[in-house]
Amino acid sequence: MSKLWKYQVVELKTGLMGGFKLETLQEELDKHGRAGWELVNVVHATPTVSSPTLVFKKEA
Image (cartoon, rainbow, N blue to C red):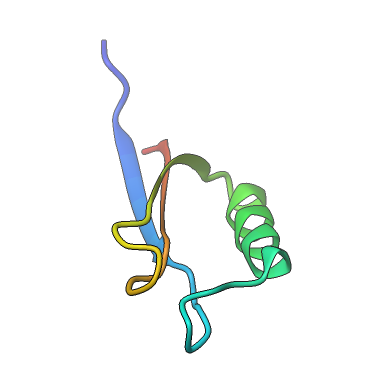
């Protein structure tokens, strides 16, 4: 029997110029990791325009 997964997508908040603090990224990763979520992808379409989007999954 195959596993069922739930997914969560989180947009990382950035500053005016599109940058973000590594501490903010670490906090998001830690927070979701404690809740049982596993990071599976980071989508960053254009570094100067969009915020990085974190994609997590955990077993349903």
